Length: 203
Image 1 (tube, one colour):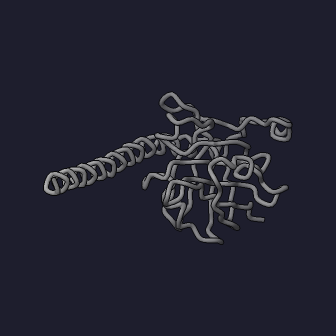
Image 2 (spheres, helix red, strand yellow):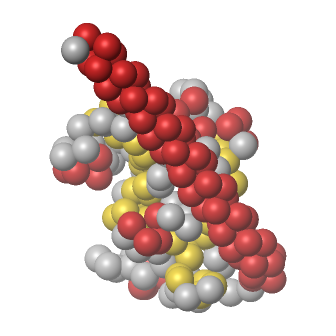
Image 3 (cartoon, rainbow, N blue to C red):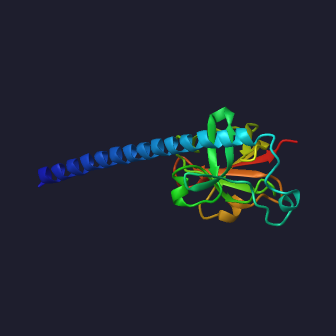
């Protein structure tokens, strides 16, 4: 009987190891695929941004100051993008989609809510190694750049980091009465909480 239990426990252990290996391999493959997708879009988006530098904005000053300003977007491979996010200190350089859902997040980080016009923009991304995983290592004082599709560059600096429960959506999107202008968030190491990086515009 003891021998039978030993064999069963051994088999269960082997199955757990196999399952863990498969999960790691699956996550790695998913991350690599996401990295290739975002890199391909990034190439197209950077060409568009380069072409638009110096051109008149597609958004009127009145629209930009309205209650619901519409950001400039570029349509690439079936999705709209608002620009390129760059954090040089952790080598993040990624396109950002204009709306968020699970399918879009598997390709690139997405605008969760807000706009860069109203200084309440929130961007989320999967913690893929090729997407927002490096965000977990961002230090206070790091530079953050958002280059819009019409060629404008918004320059931010990281001023705060905090862990937030995944159900605390109001806390994630709350800009604390204008204390910060940009929030970036992803899952933390455990996957149980969200790491929120808060940024303010450089004056």
